[in-house]
Length: 389
Image 1: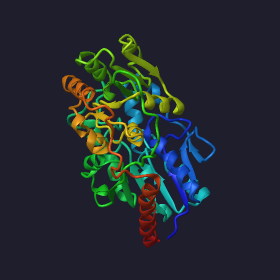
Image 2 (image 1 turned 90 degrees about the vertical axis):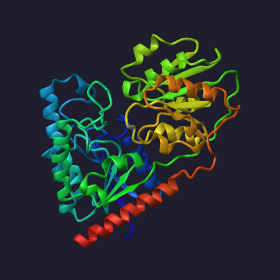
Image 3 (image 1 turned 90 degrees about the horizontal axis):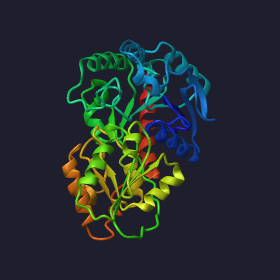
């Protein structure tokens, strides 16, 4: 079967972007359209011109979630297990757009109903796992204080059990995970196990000007939050026995902005939020990217941005980071949250031969190769759906 019409379902959609899931989904939609596909989008109340249907927003804004009381947050999580308005909105979008396949992405707030739709549609359904929403109330395997969960809490286990029982009645036909690390976390869920494939995000090769100047320059690009490990990076940089010419550039914004600004110096520079042009300039200014995550980061897109430019990555050995970085960067892996070990890796890189770069030929997927895998998933899902009708 030739799949031409795809309905994307995502909680958020550009211009509203909080993470990599909606950025990837939007880029995928653009790539499919460029190859003759027709893509519609169901999202919350804000979106671009390609949105064919919307569902009213969450009971309160995402950035206000943490300030809500326990009762309010509990009510939200119960609504996120099954939102009565979601099935109607989804099926109205399907009736209006008439897709060959539905592709769901991050669906927090749309509830489990977004993943249990195949019984009424007779069309293929592919779901991409971008985070840990199926396992964790916060989609992150993090405690409310930002610390990593060593074991899943009782409330997450309870909600996850109910959520997955709802989905298990009519699960997606094919499930894609953005990394093997994400796949490992989800294989315990019965409805996922036999449908699961790992499809890494694509890398768009980008040329860059080779940096000139004295002293090694490390870079961090991402949210300024505890779980991203940026505070550990700053402490490690300050403690490392690096030459005074060494510098650290930090791009991004978040709760730790003021704390980190107080530690800025002629060696540590905070750049704030960076648009696409500024991001390109950022990568031209650094010798190595540091990804110090202290949570199970599923597949940080910033690693791909660095690899696209053959920039080495000094990364924490957690989540999808180890499998995404180039083989030549693996000696620079360090234990997450280990300031001393990160200091040692920074020093090791500074002492490495001039011109150290990531592997030029490392088996990364470009968009053409990535789309072949996605289209195969679509065709498989449609084949399964046809047998149901």
